[in-house]
Length: 113
Image 1 (cartoon, rainbow, N blue to C red):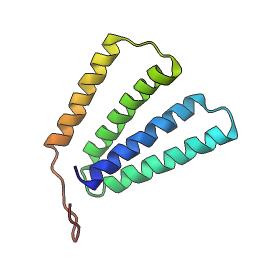
Image 2: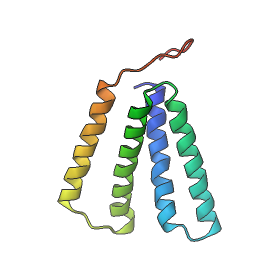
Image 3: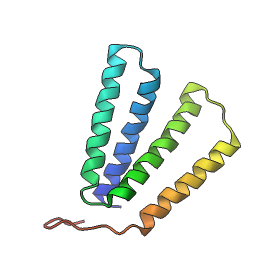
């Protein structure tokens, strides 16, 4: 895995924080953290999309963010654990992994992978 895919994973990690922040923020500090998470998430995702196909980057970013948000809701906020939900998340993860496997990487001029 090259640094650009790692950047997509980092962007998705911060996406989980800002999505949770949009739901649970109730003071200035929470909103500030949410805003910072949004900025970091999109900045890192946009940087990764300079070297990777933008459609695949966005699909992986959103998919991983969705998985992370659902798991965070279950683990930290008491959302109900349902086997159906976990099976659907597994299907989503299989699709994300499949997209990453079949997507070729473009090499920018003067840059090594």
